[in-house]
Length: 399
Image (cartoon, rainbow, N blue to C red; front, side, top):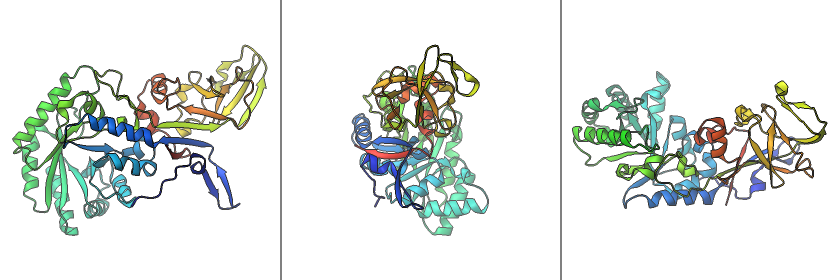
């Protein structure tokens, strides 16, 4: 059973002040659309052949959208979930998730010494599928499985050409043999990860897929194993890589893996961030604003302060470049983004007052302040924009 999720946006944006016995509205609210996530999962599912599983990646707090907020929704549309760390896997179990969990970090990512033993014991006892990339890791898993008297499920990760984690393709067979010698360690899957699946040129992705499948054959074949390779880009744009399971991440939350793919899905961004103007005042022509005084008002103006800054994940590189929406109009950011606040030019919205809503991030992909357009302004990707959203931003589930 999952923790209850609230559905009233205003209620969820509030928190209880125990000292004064009052309800206080959060200064920043991230509205996470349940219907958008459901739609995205349905669109991804339609790309798959019957019997192909969908493993939703929920690492990094659902890419910043909030694991507790979205767990129930994602669980409706996914067969299983993938996380990066041991802590994330345990958190999922603590939240009541009972279906399969794949931990993408290898066993060696656990802390070390006794902490490693304790972590592995708990992961195996709580039925988390572990990633193994070396005989040494397989040995540690076997020892832990013996201690807790339970079989350990493992997937072998093969480095097919990204040159990051995983066992080298030509060493995979020896690793699989080592795993199969351990009675309490059950090899249940093998996988790889693409480096360029979201790019127009699929040559390297196809090379990686061929290397992976060849390595699987060299290990004794796919019988009884779950094979998986496809991330969001490959799930959408490389159907031959779907195999037995796909692992979409960013697409679940409504963002295109890149602008370079041949195929695109009408994904719905799930995130909208808003706050309220916390200060409004008139300024004379010639006024300079913000740290470093990097902007000068050439005419008499009106400014407002939005309650977000780089401590909340609003990039400092958006200084003097981005916009937010007030009173239905896009208003520019003036001066440098501070740790906790941003100066907005309200000169063309003279009716704006303290307390008026400010839309900081839009769920409309065409808006200048959408996740994808903010990422372009920063020279980065949507993954970084959403995953940097800070803990002071209250996540709220809305329809």
